[in-house]
Every structure is written in C-alpha cells, then in structure tokens.
Length: 207
Image 1 (cartoon, helix red, strand yellow):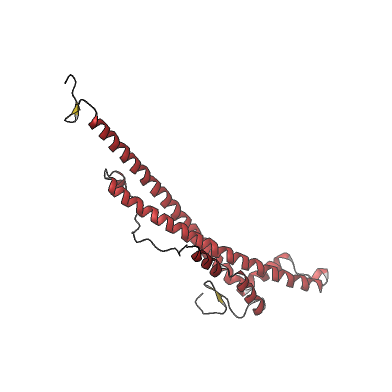
Image 2: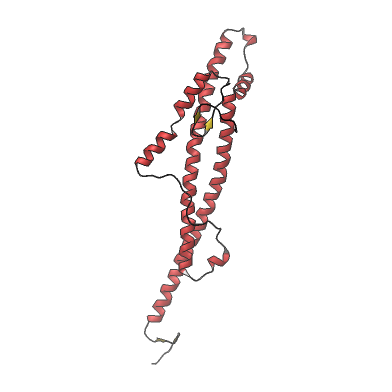
C-alpha cells in the first residue's frame, strides 16, 4: 500500500472508491481504531512504548556456554533477556493491531450480508445470490481486500516474531542454567578449599 489514502488509522490506509459506502467505511474504521486510546491509557499507567535494547543481540555460541567466567555469562544473560522482553512486547503490538483489523473485516462482512439479504429479498428464489457469490462479492470489496492484505502481513509478522521469541526464551534459560552451574561449582570449590586438612590443592592425612 504505497498510495496515500483517506481515512488513515493506526497505519491502515483506506481507499475512497470502496464497495461499501464511504461513510460506512469511515465509521467502521473509526469505531475499531482503539489502539491510540489503549496506548495512551497504558502510557498514563507508566508503560512506555517498546524500544530496541541498547545491547546488540547475538545468538549464544557453544564457546560462550563453555566459558568458566560468570561475569561473561551475566552479560550474555542480560542481552538475551532484554531482547526477549523486547520481542514479547513487539508480538503484543502485532496481536493488538491484528485484532483491530479482524474486527474491521467482520464489520464489513456484516454490512455486506445486510446488502445480500436486501438483494435476495427482492429476487425470485432461483435468481438469489449463492453463498459463493456472496463470498466472492465480499472478497472483491476494496476496503476488505486492503484489510485482508494487512491481516496477512500481521499474521506473517506474528509467526516470525513468535519464532524469535521462542529462540530467545530457550537461549536466556540455557544461559541462566549455566550461571547457576558455575555458581554451584565455585561454591563447591570454596567449601573444599576451606575444609580442615586441605592444603596445596590436595588432601593430606595424618597432619
């Protein structure tokens, strides 16, 4: 959708030559355009918009998992966790707009069904529109098609973002387990070094 069209709501652009009347198209778009209100209420509650973390995201490597340095693990963990939290917010934004688009599509379908009923009531039974003709008519509505394309875009974004979120979830949990393992190893080593009779890294008996 490269052409600038009116009205524009939440990044969704509607054409002027739609199948449903323009006034109806505007009313539907305005009624379901709730994202600005929702975002404003969340900002009032202290929730800021999702921002990309300052830490660069990189996949966790096998060499990093073998590192004995807890500090480096902590840095990796922070990066993975920050990115996971960011992607979760991105997925939520996608789902929120997807819900809005689906509701707009449902409303257009409702309007079109009313048109079909009026048409069929004025026709003889043999001349009435079939279910397939009605479906084709809805799909041919220009506003509906723009919404359908946007729904596909958002659904594809959600599929990819969900996969990224799952990858980040596995990564930061793996790093977290490694941090706990390193802590346990260090604590065990400290206990051994502090036990009576332990000297120069070995047990010496009878002294």
